[in-house]
Image 1 (cartoon, rainbow over the protein chains, first blue to last red):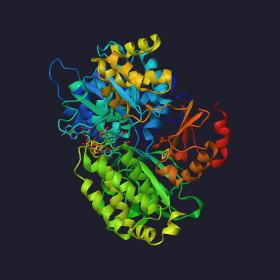
Image 2 (image 1 turned 180 degrees about the horizontal axis):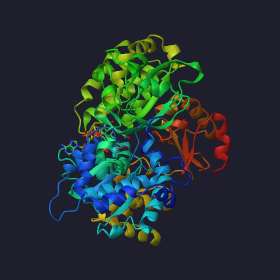
Image 3 (image 1 turned 60 degrees about the vertical axis):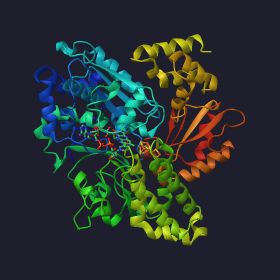
Image 4 (image 1 turned 90 degrees about the horizontal axis):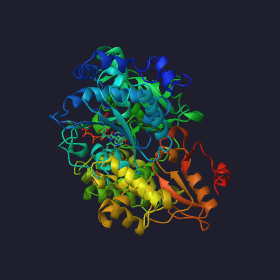
Length: 434
Length: 154
Ligand SMILES: NC(=O)C1=CN([C@@H]2O[C@H](COP(=O)(O)OP(=O)(O)OC[C@H]3O[C@@H](n4cnc5c(N)ncnc54)[C@H](O)[C@@H]3O)[C@@H](O)[C@H]2O)C=CC1
Ligand SMILES: Cc1cc2nc3c(=O)[nH]c(=O)nc-3n(C[C@H](O)[C@H](O)[C@H](O)COP(=O)(O)O)c2cc1C
Ligand code: SF4
Ligand code: FES
């Protein structure tokens, strides 16, 4: 059995409620941090743990916290990114829905470490039923003295606000999220300055993913060094993977980052293999923004080594023969799936969600969608494949935020690994439309 | 003109933020809650109370998928058209839904009952394909259950 740190108690009946959560060891980490540790010591433990941001970029959390500017008399903010809109990703929703107090406790400890007295959870509008669950947990925490003024007699004050989005993928990008919290269009800002220096209301702000903030709880409970013993290399701790597509047992799994991709897909402890005896064709291992990999490169790296479920191994070979851990959205395709069609659906998504500030992203995503729709509808030409390649190349690296890259990479990887399918589509238009 | 209750709710939001403008998204949501969609008049009403130009308010309103600048039906259907739902049978679901409703994306049934909209991933991909009607999520869908689901909404 893999060891668990976040979901170890998720199966307990009623764990959503304060009393049950508390009885099962909940708020012990908060008690420890607030009563026996200094804010800097908490940050130090997070640094030692090696925890990397679970929102997708994998930036070391302790390091980000230590970058937070602390000018005298200026408030600092913590913002929890619960915008989770990356197609194939649903781990944050799972955490908030089933163990909301783990997030609230994580927010409390993290706010204490950062010296933030107002903390926001920005949650996507489509998760319509989750804010009520969070508000209820927040009210319970208040009632039991874990939020509000002078928490547990320590003199620390904290209020947590839940802010609902209104339907915009780009508002998951941290600076767009901040703009939206300020009531504006979610247009990403140019970085630097990073939010750690100029964030919400121009004040120093840390934006962290739901899972990142929840992981702070076990880190304080067992200590940073102990946490770092889970996983391998620079992929310390456990990671939530949301698995979907053609799998016998799709769902959210907490993995110790020391298992192989093969074990994750085929073993009964995890996804239980591909239904109906079908063969594995391809996988997008880290949410829709990361490169798709064909089965052979998914299970083994180009060097012939077993591919592991870690940041480093999933990235082995760069984008030529590897992919990324990303947001942990693990999408599996069996032999009957059409890569061209799925690439079209992704291109359409990114075009729709582009905020329109940068022309390479705004125009490029539109062109990619158009060309892919043509190919999908049997109206494509051989030269369209090179055209697609050319468009994606012109987007990458030429935009304000990485949404442009995120739109370009899947198209590039699909052509790189499945060019024959694109060619088949343009050569057999009648069959392709079916 | 804002109704008294709209005005009260918006003023409550204004008190939460450092500058009036910052309540823009919430104010639009409040107006939409009361009127189902935000008309040009709704935009002007929000602009007045927040001391913004109507153009500025409109640029915020049109940015967000879930703020409607056109009349919508009594119930909103958000059909997930992202990759996992595609893998698990979105196309048949979409075909059947369009058949049953007799409308395309972005349209409202003539009786004003439903508006059909595409929506990116609803975050329930392990139970794909999925859709939402108003606040209710439906998962693991097959085309033949759609009729019963729609019947619940009048
Ligand atoms: N979870 C989801 O639903 C989605 C996740 N993503 C992921 O988002 C990733 C891109 O995110 P970005 O925030 O643009 O990446 P980034 O690399 O710019 O930043 C990562 C984090 O580190 C911080 N940071 C980096 N350098 C810093 C410095 N010198 N000082 C202070 N802070 C610093 C940033 O503020 C940010 O919080 C992609 O890799 C993708 O996987 C993308 C779409 C959706
Ligand atoms: C287009 C785009 C969408 C993003 N969406 C999310 C998201 O939904 N949730 C999230 O945590 N991070 C998202 N990110 C990453 C954030 O910008 C940021 O890196 C993250 O919230 C930092 O938290 P972490 O360090 O805990 O990972 C997105 C980035 C981009 C470019
Ligand atoms: S890359 Fe796209 S989404 Fe990001 S700022 Fe530019 S136009 Fe907007
Ligand atoms: S892709 Fe449809 S719910 Fe995620």
